[in-house]
Image (tube, rainbow, N blue to C red; front, side, top):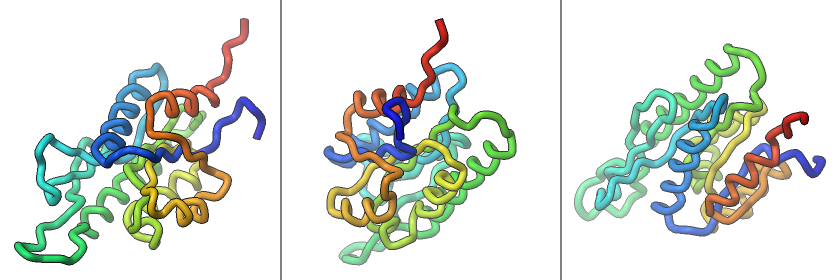
Length: 184
């Protein structure tokens, strides 16, 4: 990789869940506002004061939402992740990627935002298929990574990814590293 190329995947780390998901949502808005930039993917939709089981995954193309957690009832100690919601969210991203590929043209204008590489993805579930589809299509990806699974992330992404602090400047520097400089 030369100095003017960016890694395919930017992984953000270092902040609480709400801050990182807010950063990803804002980055998606800012990137989509740039002329010619296409943004696909999902972010967690966290309304202030929402309960754990009320977190939704918001599809950035369709606007559809899928539940991230299921209510297991009072006193339940099991994992509340909703596998059907995660699968539906991943399928929505995969459809958006397939639609973008069908359009053809230069794909360097397209970025896929995937809310998180967490335990589910480390185990091959969750949004894993969406990650695979984005990489297979050679699209740029922005995500966040749980600190507890940094080693699994490194094994999954290898040299396709760069891990940076979860701040807007990290996203700007990464995205702008791949933007061609206009001829004078």
